[in-house]
Image (cartoon, rainbow, N blue to C red; front, side):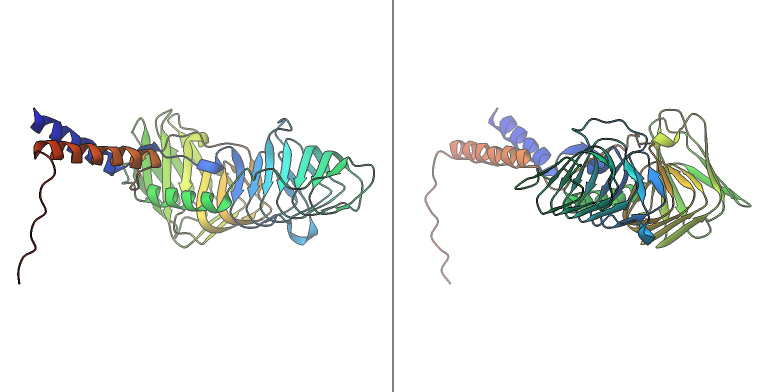
Length: 352
């Protein structure tokens, strides 16, 4: 009987030490049309959904950028989160509220609800806002509703933590074994998956530019396309789906890319490129963009990734697991104590 109990404790400790199984997700980037860890300098276009920028938001060439153009969220939703300074000119934020950790400079803004600013707010024009709450100084028209606050509310996103977890996710997905086939005929790639849950494909970034990519997979399944290469470019071409799969369940993973360029392409699917400087030249993305930085004139359509990336077992036990592991060790020690009849006398040191 004692032997069985000891075996059970050892088995329990083994499971605890193995870590916890969890679902792979986009973490902090869930729900965001654009999520970059550093700077964003897209200009002259818009993101239909939410935006998160860990560095500075400043459209190139002094231009402007429209935010959350396809949403109608309440003021309690942060549809824009910026970790650095924000600059825009004559464009709108159609939905939700804004959180800017640094300074906010917006000429003639239209902000649906509120803006919370950790530095100073500057507006050299007019505009219409729900309200501006700022920690620094106010340099704007008296007609805009504004108030001074002592400190910002808690930041809604920890960008450093998000970068770590999303980079880890990208590496994990890149390590998945491919179970779908990839065939190339002239300039057309045909990707065929038959798994009802998760279909993984491997593609080389070299030579992918300007090609047609046709993906077939069962309805309701998830597609991961791992694209290798340090510098990847899509110049024209197209991405198409059949078999019931839609772009909501497709993610292109560029885990080794430091540069990713889209030029005049309608890119159907989400992009996970945590180490890449993204450049978009016209065209659009029907999906989410996750990158280090982003610049250019690409339009972002609010097509959110809803696929199921499966589970992973963490190599490091969670805090609750450590507690269970500690309790198990105490229980194990107690059982050994009883089995051996109490405290054993200390052994004499070996003579040398």
